[in-house]
Image 1 (cartoon, rainbow, N blue to C red):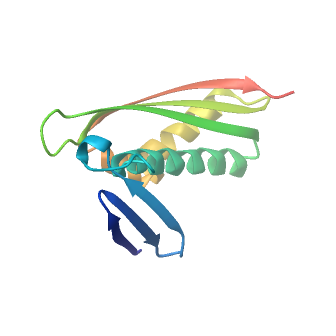
Image 2 (cartoon, rainbow, N blue to C red; image 1 turned 90 degrees about the vertical axis):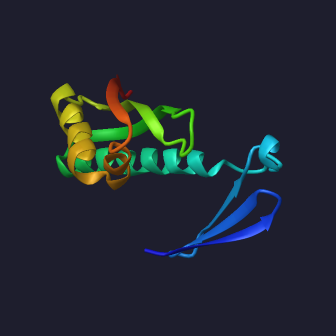
Length: 139
């Protein structure tokens, strides 16, 4: 996997991923940024949410569960001193589907957290991670 980051100006950077996609990042105004794009650590958090959501949907689909939607809300705290690593991350999943069994959703989240989501497993080295979920019955 590769990624190239190019400094644009001020505290703005443009990433080009190995798959050829572009991602803008910017610093906070107090750090010289113009607030034009997410902060790099917000991108780390978003990537982690995407990683685990991908896993949960894939695991439920593979088990032939009628999953129709999955939203993950992440709330994170960071250390006060540099390096300001994540110290606590709360994942809240809202999984939508027809007749989803709570034990299937719990298993999918557990497998993502313990085996498949590289990002959350990596962040778990510095952060206390918790998982909660809600199942919403689809129409």
